[in-house]
Image 1 (tube, rainbow, N blue to C red):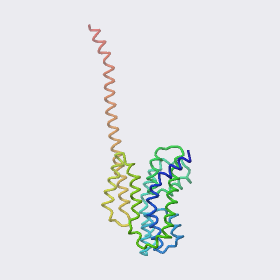
Image 2: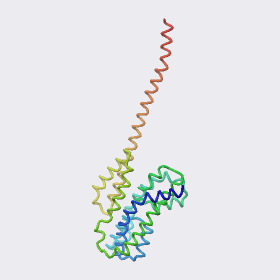
Image 3: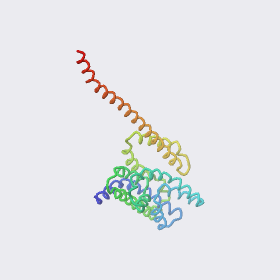
Image 4: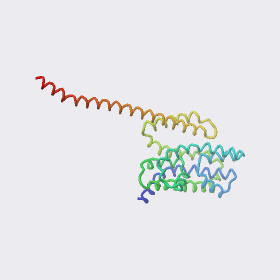
Length: 261
């Protein structure tokens, strides 16, 4: 069972690994142009493990921005991971603290998208599915960064080649099939529209705001659906009780009619 779950986790994350490789490759190349060594770049991806935050931080480093500004900016960009953690908390509360800490370290956009469906099923040993997907993506990310730092620095304008779109395409392919319920559809549509409207905000703040608004819209739709379902159940219960009362009264009416005759 454990081996099967590990294999399934690696299989689930593989398409996103293919898409993420060019993006991490670019991060590695740009980090060298920003003044890092190959070792520093590789260790950075190994410990930080956050593509969008790394990319923005590199731009700020090249602009000689104060370290506190870089810290605050990357912190804001990664606030969306709080939403991922909240979503997964119900399904990992049974695990030990070290296991949950390890799982939180690798909770990236891609890992969440590839594993949330499996985690919701609450199957025994599902943590191995998650950990396999997480480590598979992590290893792929670090290797790609190393290759970018070693080779990509020879291409000074590599960020303009559009290679990072491969990760976006793979991510869309993973996420879209999971958008099935009305709540998910509403959240996705609202977040998409909001993200487009706020795309001009600096430091990817539009993405964070769009995620929060999308989650709130999905939450409100979920409450609305629950109220509607509750109302339907209440009406159905009234109808059933009325029919039951009529069924109980019919024998009494029949008996009364016979006695009168």
